[in-house]
Image (cartoon, rainbow, N blue to C red; front, side, top):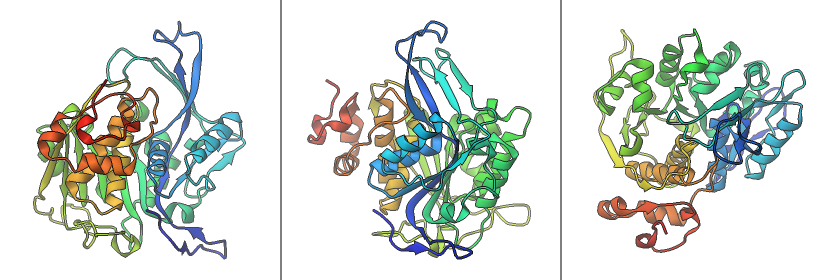
Amino acid sequence: MTATGPCNALDGAAAVEVVDVVTLGESMVTFLPSRPGRLADVPSFDRAIGGAESNVACTLAAAGHSVRWVSRVGADGFGDHLVEAIGAYGVDVTAVRRDPARPTGIYFRTAGDRATDAHEVAYYRAGSAASAMSVGNTDLDAVRAGRVLHLSGITAALSGECLGLLRALTVPVSGRPLVSFDVNYRAGLWADADGAGVLLELARRADVVFVGEDEAEEAWGVAGGPEAVRAALPEPGVLVVKQGAAGATAFVSAARSCGQSCRWGGSRPKESGTRQAPASDTHPRPAPTPSTFVPALTVDVVATIGAGDAFAAGFLSATLRGLPVRDRLRHGHLTAAAALTAPGDLAVPPARHHADRLAALDDQAWGRLRLGPGWTQADQAPEEVRTP
């Protein structure tokens, strides 16, 4: 579903097209090993692309939404490749700036699972072009010309300028897009900075928040399950707590929404209402909100990298379509399953009619699904979607 109509630009500049989703953040050229083994032993690598926000952008574009990616890359061959590769997914890359003084970030990884100790990742992103993003050098009109603005905590960790940009974009002012925020806590990126406090601040200003149960405990010391996470983070209108292989729980409040600036197609999401100020000592916390839990699917995992980004893309896609909360979570799981059964950061999501059919299964049929590599290309009856 695409948005129509331009967004008025400032200072007489050309109008910016309004899109379904805008994502802002760093993308890097990724080098995937040609065979398993230590980085020291791998003889060659295949080039791909990776980055939380660009992963979401590409997945949403592949699912049929209009999407813009805003970032900064070097004036180098790797920057050329990123812009061309992301643009090839149908993503609008016209607001990506080139930096002649800083390089495009790259990283190498082994074929092991990054969720375990059987892996190596070598990042070369310090001083990258994306780390220089700021309020002054970013096209803010292009960033704000979307029904949804998707951000992540990784961008906030790149530099003080990047953090200042995210703070400016998450100010709870009238008319801003629906702000989606994936916490994406990476302790190694924050060094001596108070990353946990910064991410909590940004999450409290967002409308939709994605956070893993494990990262909430690591970053904020919150244990006790999704309800404990919600008690610590009551402000967002929608809070999605990812629980790994168990599933995910969504808390939806009628207290906050995207307001008039977000023109939802079809039925309006139930969390629509009036934006509330974040809770504080002088603002009472909202009453407990109902939750919806959807178990994860049984998946024959190829690689876990990119699954969280895919989940966010699936959930946002279903949100844009006005689907019920249960179906939003199911679309998140299905899109994540596409990434889990592919080797790189990005995977082709299931066709919309295919995903809709699976998301509509009853609970018993949903629990029986088992998905393996290539399942997104299968256009069969739901009961036949099985690993060969």
